[in-house]
Image (cartoon, rainbow, N blue to C red):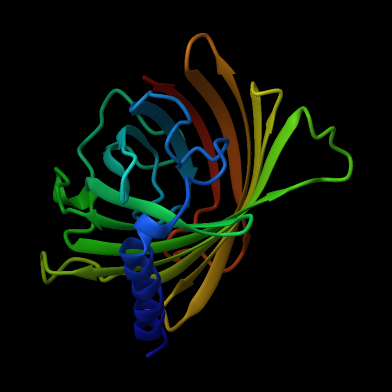
Length: 268
């Protein structure tokens, strides 16, 4: 019942955002990476490498290719993620012997605005494209998400040099269809993020990601992540992230023991 209620609440938020999008203002702060760029650049390509220890199906050692297309209307974002999980699933992995994971498609909607607050939302579908099947969940997944973004001023910052936001995101993910023998997924995920861009070049992100696994009778777990990055050359960004479990047992959906992520992206 709790999971169903969460789905209804998040779906209502997504529908409301979509229905009122034409009344909303511009996108959230330009420093927020998931928003459309503030210039005429319409595409972003991203390559990231994740080495993960004791992760669940979605949190495995893998390489991920991401392509995003930005728009200025009610639909703000189309995203395709193609994960290439290693056949060797431990922390070291084997990047030169990957398989194909479950592909994801996300549609992001124009945010609602209320004063300094911005409320983007999205719908994401995961497809059971894994080859071999053991590298995926063998079921479709529906992910409904709603975010709150607010600019903040930290007391130690020189405001002319910093652009800082506080972000809160809630997602409900449920599996459906696909292979009857595949793993069921029903979890509510939260992301609490403090994100700073300094001098328009350097980025720093602190994130706490709790998760409630309804398949495991509502057990909870969480990971904490810290990420540093830099914009360089012409419209390029690179980053390094470290993450670690901070509470909960192993096996809670969307959690892991330890993760190191290295990524690069170009907007064009």
